[in-house]
Each structure stands twice: as structure tokens, then as C-alpha cells.
Image (cartoon, rainbow over all chains, first blue to last red; front, side, top):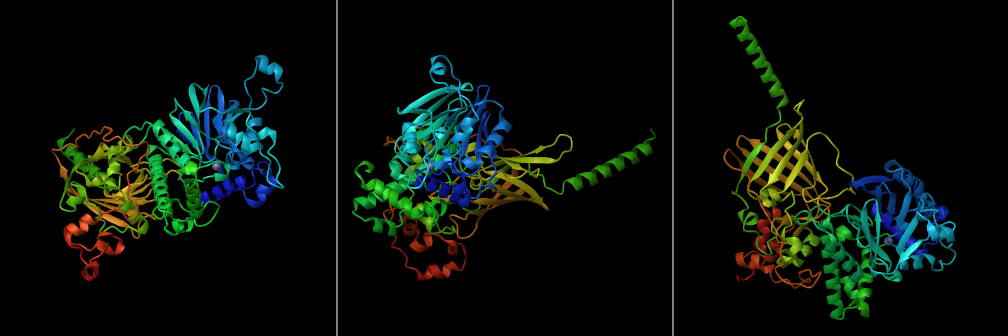
Length: 332
Length: 287
Ligand SMILES: [Zn+2]
């Protein structure tokens, strides 16, 4: 299933501390990208979801140019660029990284190089290459992870692939292609550097990996992730959404992985995670050990839909992560 | 024109048009308002099922735990109040209206549209041979439906459903389910058969029938819903029963003297032979 390969990419990116971000050789040995096709799904008038391998890409196009949320893998950049050019000939101005994982940032360098930043005044005078390449926006913690010393034997991420503009506040706003775009920080969720991107006029949210539809969300504890933060992010997304009626239509959500969603899907996701969180928290309160919790199968009813018995992010790992989160002081 | 010649010509035209229309119309005309008949499953359809009644549903262990964890307080949350019934369930309620969308030149059937009384939802059944969207496209409560005529039976295939339910007491139907429906018209009676295939939550396909009578006089009423805060809850609160703590689920079995195990459903409970099994199971004392 596609989700498994997507996950394996995600983990590899984490395990190798993103060292192989641009090392196409080692990627190609492990994963055959030759058959990956980049497909575009029209979401709203000027918003597209690009699907290939790795995290979903959100594309916003218009008179000002192109804005991209997440960039998948470096190996796919040429195909992604070709697909973008089918939809817009405008300059790529902005790239937003929802977080640092390689399956969402691998194409940063190539897509940035294909674009340009609007620059002038004292900035253009002081920084000679300020206009070269698109701006890459991310939360500060995403940049910190990308510039952390790489794992042994792995190359560092080249500076051309790093965010060029970071924020450390709850939100960062920009106006592009005739609409306000709000980038919101979701603390300690999938990682500690997650952003969701809200296109206010188009009424579309690009969620990154705090919301996925293909499997239990990966809680990257090593990089500050937590189940509480993921649930909080899902609640924040639900708060932003205005449906047409009941749980249908209105604001649309492009997930980090999986299918285009509306509020009903995010509500089901939030319900599933909240119930699992409550069950494991109750077991911890009763003094159950991790082994006892695992034996009690607290995710049994959701496993056929969300779980995995093999691959990178198994149900067991998910339960372990939730248990670990909730056993610590911050998690309670 | 000579009246004899004219009569012959008219006759020929009439015969020709009859031939043409019968050739084109091996398919039935389903358009109109169809009023639900309630000769079966009344409690399940209007009053709503009893808590703990999953008998006759081919649910697996995972879905049973979903059901036992479900709390009716969930639907008091504002975001759940106006949640519509999915297309594989909504036909259970009251009347439906079907109408055709035809190409104005060729009269070819492009789509059938169906409106449910319940929640006033509308769905489209594409009849023009188009393909279903890729899996990563949006799922909806109505799903994406294509239909074709198998003789005089309209068969519909639906994908891209959001998560729904088999019964309104917690038995979930997953978003991986696909649904096959048949509309069969016998004069003024229309039978709807729905077959739910769910690789996540069902041991066997779940099949349900509903009947309708053609109506000359009725219209499908409108249906409005507005969510309100009925109870102040902590943000993000989701009512549910922790495993093993749901006492409500005994209500159905104890009220009707049905063994707990039988009330918990599973494919075996769909079949008549299960009566033999029921006789061997302990019966709970009545409440
Ligand atoms: Zn990720």
C-alpha cells in the first residue's frame, strides 16, 4: 500500500536525521521513484493538491506567482516542477515547510532554485542574492532540526535546502495571490516544529502531518512530538472549519498524507485519537505497565483502519509513543 | 393531403415512435416521489434502535468494540448534531424523490438525482459511464456513485464515502466501504436493496431492503437543522465508554430476554440457523 512506502520514507528521513535529503544515490537504492507520477487534484479555484510520493503538496497559483506547501522528495522535483508548469507559468515565490521531515522538504533546494523572491531597497543592496530563489518559510524549530548535526556517516543538509525565513510566534501571516494566508504553529504535535497553513479566501487548510488519513499519526517523540499536541492541532483545525451543513463541505483540508478531507474526516480522526488517548490514560492511572497496556489492545477497534503490523510506524510503536507521552508530566 | 394517406402516415409514425421508445426505454423510469412503506424494521428506522442491539449485523470484533464504546451523548455535541445520514443509510427514512438529467439533444440519461427526506441530502448517480475519481479525492456522506441498467434493474456502485454507520447505536461503517445498490420497480412499488462491503468492519456483506410506493400527491418535505450548544463541555471532550464499562448495552438483551451474545451481532446472527445457537445460550434476567 502506498501509505506504507510513504511512512517508510518518513521514518527514514527521521532516522537519518535528514542527512540523505539530497543524496539521490542512496535514496534511489532503497526506493524506486521511477514509477511515481505526480498528479494534480483541483481543490478550489487556485488551489491544487499534488500527489506523488511523500507528503501531499499544496499549490496556490495566481497573478502573483506560485506558492508551494511542502516539496516531497528531491528525486521528484523535476516532475513536480513540470506539473506546476502545466498549471502556472508564474514565478515560484514562496515555499512553506509544514515541518522538517525529508518526505516534506526533500525538494526544497530544487524548487527554491526554480523560483525567485521579490527583493529590493536596502535588502537587495545589503544581501546580493536576496532575490535568488524562492523564500522558504518554516517554524524556527523545523530549521533547528534541519541544521542539527547529522547522524554518523550522513551528510548535512545543504544550505540551499534550508528555510530562509522562520517564525517563532504563534502565527505568521502573508498576502499572496489576492488572499490572506495564515501560517499557524501547532506546538509539540507531529514534531515540535509543525505549521498548518490556512488559505482564508480559498477556504483551504494545508495541515502537514498533524492530520493524516492513511494511518495512525506518526508521533515523532525524538523531535518533540506528542499525542496531546496532535489532538490539540486536530481541535484547532476543526475550530477553523465552517462546514456547509452538518459535517459536510465548506472548508477543505489537504492532509499531510492521504486524501482531501472536510470537517467530517477531521472529526472522525479527532474522535479516534481522543478515545485512544483516554483509554491509555485510564490504564496508566490504574498503574498498568506498557506491556499490560499493549496486551489490553487499546486500539483494537481502530487498528483495521489505521494500524499497521509491519513497516515503519506500527500500531505497537504508536501505542508505545502514546504511553510514553502520557506517562510523562507534560503528557498528563 | 388525402385523409387515407395521412392516416397511414400517422400510423407508421406512431408505430415507429413506439418501436424507438421501447428500444430506448428497456430501462425503467424511476422519476417521481416515492413514499416509504414501513412494513419492516420500524424500530430501526424511526424511533431508533435500542442501545446494545447489534443482532443481525455482520460486524467483526473491531466494530463491536466501536459499538460498545459509543455513547449516545456524542450526538449532543454541536458538531455531531446535524451530521447527515450517509447514502447507504438515508433511504431508510420516509420519502425519496428521483429525477433524471438527460442530454437535451440525444435524450441519453446523464445522471439520476436522488433526494432523501432525511436531512434533505441530495446525491447524483452518474449514468454516463464516467470513471470514479482517484482514492485521494474527497470522500463525502453521499459518496461517488455510478449506475447502469442490468435489464430493468438499476445497479449503483458507490465509493468515496466518509465513515458512516450501519445502525444508529454505534455500529460503524468505515470509509473504506464500497456499496452496491439496486433499484427495482414493479409498477408502483420500488424496492431498494443496498449491499455494504466493508473490509474494515464487516465479516460478510451487509444487505438491507426498503420499499416505496409511487406517489401522485406527495412532495418530499424540507428538513432543517441548526446546531446549538446543549451542554457546556470542556473543549475537545468526546463522550465514550471505556472498554468493559458500558452498562447501557445490556438494555436490549435484558428487555427482550435475548442472550447477550446474540445481541452483540456477527455474521452468524444474520442466519435462521442461529436460532438453534440462541436456544443454547444463557438468557439474562429481565430488567
Ligand atoms: Zn512528517
